[in-house]
Length: 123
Image 1: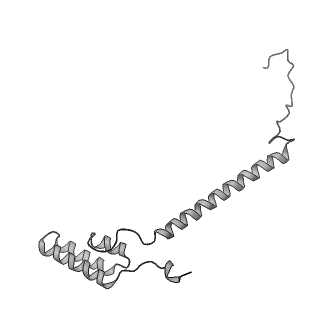
Image 2 (image 1 turned 90 degrees about the vertical axis):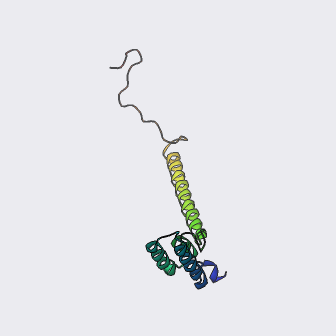
Image 3 (image 1 turned 180 degrees about the vertical axis):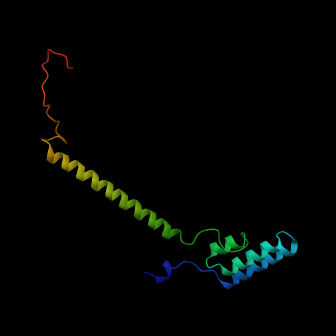
């Protein structure tokens, strides 16, 4: 198995430069304010993954798709498998415990301690 397959994709310096240039161009055209441009440029320089760069630059550079989607999917499938396995185990224990306790049925009916004659109504 390749060791680089488990590593997340990191942003390259050229992508950061592209994002900064696009932000500076938008600032020069007046599309964004100076404060927003400064904040987005600083956030773009701190970005590590293409997704972080995309969010920091306002969609001007990077990638919208998460690079750790396979890890998230693997975790969800594993947790689902464990829950199904636990539910199946509880069900099997319940069924076989009931069969063991009863005479062919799941749980035997309790015998009434006081018998009521059939010709008298209860109460």
